[in-house]
Image 1 (cartoon, rainbow, N blue to C red):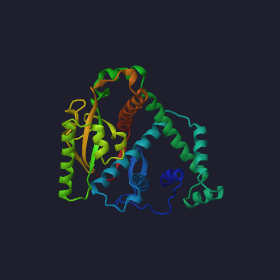
Image 2: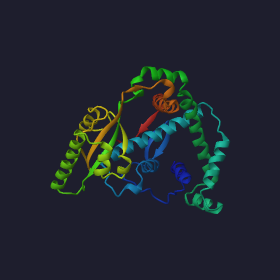
Image 3: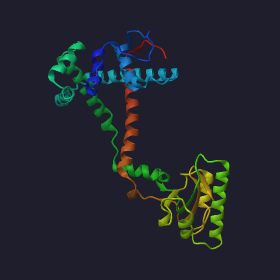
Image 4: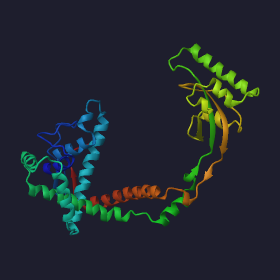
Length: 324
């Protein structure tokens, strides 16, 4: 079993030399589980655990509960993989040798020379024949997943339309407002007095506007924005994308009016409302149907996988020798 998990490292161009370093406890038994009598070793569990929490991240503290959670997930994954492989054998599935040959060439391409490849195999007490058997097992497992999971999770055009009709609220373009900005810049590290002066300046500029001043002229005269000569930056905001207080200031004024000063880390902003657009329901032809298809496929795939593996597990004899 130890050699089986070397495959992952061969494919990634990373090799295991000696004992596996891990955050898992040292007193884990050599055999952590059996699936219909086939053992899953502590070495395999540690390899899968390290794939999920790489050693490179060990300089930070990992919560003990997180370690337990990842250990459970890693062991469940190993059990699932073995269940799937055994089901492929039970169904008499034949290995697609073209896939095996493709993986074989992929592994060889990661080595500087055939001799280096043989040295790594020898160091890990692995022969080319055994490695090929490992690749065949992987190919069978992948083919089994394609047949039982992916092929049964497809999403038709009718499925897309049905989902759209039942979830139209998810395909609404929110109310949005187009604004032009005037910025009164304040040093983020400035004193309270400097920030108060910035606010007063922004308020005074707004008073000039209310008294009949032209906003574009005010922008060119007072704004600290790089776009001041172009009349200020023009931006769109969607309802629901901002803090409630800021949103109120932007969506309450009418077109042509200017908001009260809004504070940010950059200073104080005055926004003139250029345009308002109400919320719009997107039609089925306007939505990104391929993106939706992929999203629905992943949901179906995950559901199908959980149900199918659970069915395999109920039919199998699975013994786990470590506790949570």
